[in-house]
Image (cartoon, rainbow, N blue to C red; front, side, top):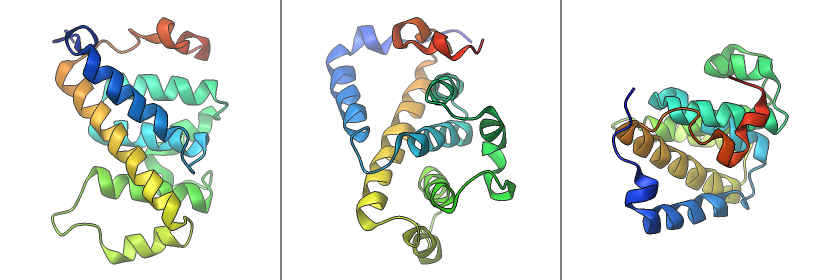
Length: 159
């Protein structure tokens, strides 16, 4: 894969603002472990290798178990995820791959049994920012692992 445009060099002001928005989502009502799972699952669905590489390493650094990372693509059939995590993953998937008719009430009602309105709102912003990063990185093709040193991701012990 050949990188196309270095958006950090070409649009530093926009990158700064977008990074500030990402940072704000870290102060949300959604815990870090779920934010990690959501970021990985969205990257899987979108096919963003750069983001998948980054978020798996972040999750590992944050203490996520490797087996859960391996099961994430098939979370519905795995016993390793709690109901709250399942709700967050279901919401992530439906917002990442929006059906033509929009989000069905049945899915919202199921998610609502595990997450408060505030949490659903916060999670929606998290999914939005993750999907935006995925689209930016899919389009401009930065090299996976190229920011590991800058963000301490080399500490994950994955290479």
